[in-house]
Image (cartoon, rainbow, N blue to C red; front, side, top):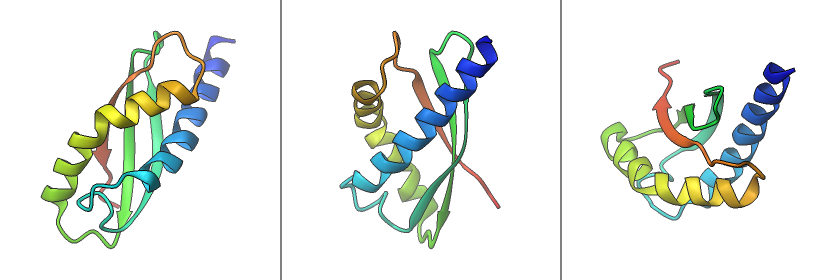
Length: 97
């Protein structure tokens, strides 16, 4: 039963982050079309690894800097959207597919 809740939580995080990433105003992040491909959250819901795929990315280094600067805002907005005891710390990664 706990794994079902974790899977639902991962899906919820993926859905909300997909919407939030479109709202980031930093031009370094808005270089291309961003998709959240996968989310893995720890059992205690404190940490989430988020894999992103970006089509049309011009400068990966600048994109990563922009993501790092937006991570706090993303976490805060995620916490206000989801009803969780703890808002997980986000580890954002790019997929190379």
